[in-house]
Length: 261
Ligand code: ADP
Image 1: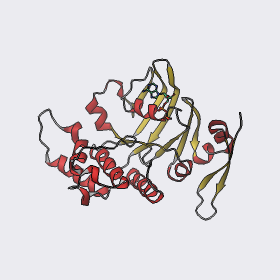
Image 2: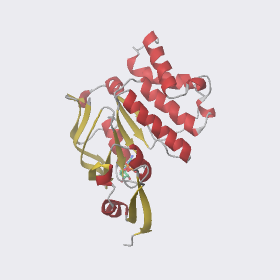
Image 3: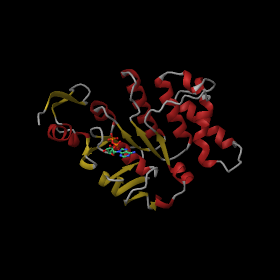
Image 4: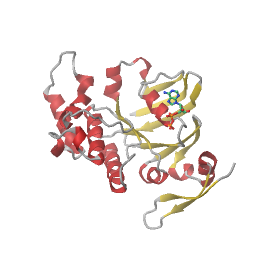
């Protein structure tokens, strides 16, 4: 399965937020989206998910154009983990994950065996089964994020979009969540697009990267190709050193100084 986005343009009234953005991602792959604040990362995810309607551009899942898909068809194809928005109502964790089945329920439909088993396996895969009878507003940030991922998995879509899934988490939970996403991509054959503000985490967990600058693709390619000092300097206006750890072979970005002017 392949998701292919071509020549996407989007404006909020007079603010041009995306211009000629193209990308593709296949099953089991993680495409990391990086770029400074306001570069269009969230807007891009919302256009792919059809929350926003692009002015131009096409989005294909294999050969199917999704522009006329209903909300339910979108939900069967694309699962979303939105940027942290805390749910302050006291829903049970199991109810939150069941909401992922919305795309399969008929108007007055009751949950079927298949719905229940999708919820159960999503809870198990994300290590949240033991939380099912807890209230969503009474669990930790890391647990919360795993529950929201479980809700997206319950949709049984083949594409997963995540918007800064590690925001506000401490480092051990950041790694835990990203390891979970990576293992789900491989186990469930998911094509994953993930916005990450942390360049070091993007280097470690993305298979490929897309660097946005002012709504345009500045550079797309392998982690090595995108995380070149000149790309980061130009887009983030910061001098950096890119260091490869000889033991793990992981790249990291060391900020050196902010550029003037
Ligand atoms: P990022 O996720 O990279 O921080 P966004 O996609 O949120 O960037 O924003 C891209 C651009 O669109 C920015 O200039 C931002 O100010 C603008 N923008 C985002 N949301 C809205 C909105 N609801 N109305 C008007 N402008 C918006």
